[in-house]
Amino acid sequence: MQKKEQKDVPAATRSAYQKAMEVVRKNNIEYGIELLKGIVQREPCFGDARQSLRQVEKQKAASMGAIAKFFANLKVNGVLFKGKSAIKKKPLEAMAIAEDVIALTPSSTAGYSLLAEAAEAANALFIAIEALETIRELQPKNEANLRELARIYEADGQGTKVLQTMQLLSQLRPGDLEIEQKVRAAAALATMQQNQWEKEGTAREKVKDSDEVLALEKGDRIVRNTDDINDMIERLEKLVAEGDISIDNRRKLAELYQRGGRHDDAIATYNWVAEKIGSLDPTIDRAIEKSHIAKIQLKIDEYKATGATEAELAKLQKEIDDYRLERAEDRVARYSNDTQLRYDLAIVYWDLEMIDKALEQFQLAQKNPNRRLSSIVYLGCCFHAKKQFDMAVEQFEKAIADMPVMDKDKMNALYCLGVTAEDMGDAEKALNCFKQIYSSNMGYRDVKARIEKSYSKK
Image (cartoon, rainbow, N blue to C red):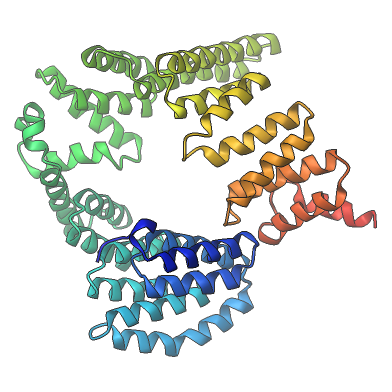
C-alpha cells in the first residue's frame, strides 16, 4: 500500500475532505474528527486526510481533562481487543478500529500501537512508521517502541533512520553491548544504502572497520555533546591531513566547528567549500553569517560581564544588524527568484523596523507555499505598524481561514487580530479572538489578563 495524494483519491473523497476541513476551520473539533476519521477508514492511504486528522486529534488531546481521559480509556478496552483479534485476517478492519481508539484517546499510545501492527500486516509500512513515531513523541523513552520503530524502518529500507533510532536507544542504555553492536550494524547498513562507498572513495578507503563507519555517520546526524563533536572533528581533520579533498567531509567539518564554537575555523572551512564549488550558495552564505554573528554575540556577552556602557553594547548590536541586512540583501540580489530568501530578507527588515521594505518582501514571499501563511500574518503586522488597521484585519483573517488547527501559528494570528481589533475599538471582536486562544492555551502570552480585564469592565 502506497501513500496517496489528493489527486490520487476519488472525487467524492476529495469533496468529503474539503467539507471536513471546513468544519475544522469553524472549530467544530469533534465533528471534524468524525468526518476525517471516516475518510481515513475508507481511504487509509490518503496522506493529507491522515495528517489533518492527527493534527485535530492533538488539539482535542490538549483540551481533555484528567476525568475525560479516564472515561475515554475505559471505553476503548473492549475495542482494542476486537482490533487485535482482527489484525491477522482483517488488517484493514483492525486499522479502522485503531482509528476509533485514537479518536477517543488521542494522547494514549494503545491506539497507535494497534494501528502500527495492523498497518504492517496490511503492508502499509508508512502508516506503521507514522504511528510509531507518534508514540515516540508521546513517550520518547519507551524502549520497546524505539526497538519496534527501528525494525520497521529497516523493513522499509530507511537505514539512516534505523541508525538514528538505535543511537537514541544507546543513549537510554549506555554501555549495553547488544545495543552498541546493533548501532554499528545500523551504521554499516545506512552507509551501504546511501551508496557512499563509491561516491566518497577517498574518505571510505580510510575507513577500516564498522566502528569508523559509525563515527562518520554519527558525525552526520546525532552528535549531542562536546566530546562527540571534538571526536568527530579529530577524525575529519585526520582525513583532511591525509589528503582527503571531499567537499562533503569539509562541509561536515565546518558544521562541527560551528557547533563546537570554533567560528573562525568554521568560516575558513565554509569558504574553502565555496571556492571548490565555484560559488557562494545561499546555504553556505547563511552558515558563514551565523558564525560571524556568533562571534559578535560572544563579544557582547564579554562586554556585559565587564560592565560595558549601553553605547558600547549598542554599537556591537548595530554591527550585527548591519551585517544581517547586508547578507540578506546580497542573497536576494544574487538569487532574486528564491522566495525563501525574500522571506528571510523580509524578516530582517521587520526586525529592523523597516516596515515598508518588509511589506514589499512579504508580498513576494507569499509565493513560497511553505511561507505563505506566515508571510500573510506578517503582512498584517506591517499594516498594523502603519496603523492601517482595516488592511491588517483583512490579512489576519485571510491567514486564519486557512489554519485548521489551533497550533502556535494560529494562536499568533488570532492574537494579532485581537490586538488590532482592540486598537480599532472593536472590543467584542477582540474578546472573541482571545477566547479562542484561551480555550486551547490559557497561558498564551497575556491572553488570560486581557480576558479578565474585559470581563471586569462588564
